[in-house]
Amino acid sequence: MAAVPQRIYERIDNGLYDDESDSWWGPDSPFFLMTTSLNPARVGYLRRVVGRALGPDLAGRRALEVGCGGGILCEEIARMGFATTGIDPAAASIAVASRHAAGAGLAIDYLRGSGERLPFADGAFDAVFCCDVLEHVRDLPAVISEIGRVLKPGGIFCYDTINRTVASWLMAIKVSQEWSQFAYLPPRLHVWEMFIKPQELRGLLAQSGITWREHRGLKPNRPLWQVLWQLYQRAQGRISMTEMGSRLGLVECDSLQLMYLGYGVKRGAMSNEP
Image (cartoon, rainbow, N blue to C red):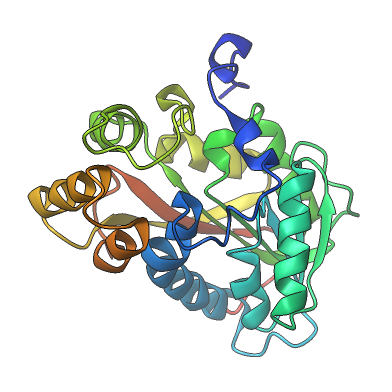
């Protein structure tokens, strides 16, 4: 798998993350839906697989989130017990994350930087997380290689991303971004050609010294017609983003057709897994 061609990468609007307003934590922001609709399933999964790989005692363990944005997931990682670092190329997002963590009483080290060139020593972290990010980067092989480099042997890499399927083209691009009667995300937030098939990601993990362990799918918690109805209600101004987020969420499933979560373990040392 190669880096994304420039003509495709130019179609994605990663400048959205340079917004200096507190859009990450505003309850009517689409980004805040990660807290209400995605994090319950995602964080539950992450806690489970981290415990499987590293054990229940995380005292003294270091974790990195690559592409931390405004800190919505980073704060959950810190609450797991890790000494936590977040890195992101958007200075505005880093500023928002730092302010919110301070207000929450969380000691998280935030810095600006790129996943393609992580400013950390080899084997610096026991865990690396990269969620809602892999489908946004220009050079995915370089990012995965860098993650493998900064992981300790036996350390865990956790991620989620979007599969490149007809289903994801319809739901993540057309319904979520383009069709005005349903859309709730900014246009050009995602580009379908940058979505990642599970087998492509598994290949990159193997090349970076990370042994893939599993994938789990994510799907809406309601039937499709109910999802579309809630999206339509919000687009018509009949319910708020907050109300929609309280009704719609994602749950784990076996199908990888839309979003999927997964993890791998850095080769070279024994982990706690059977």
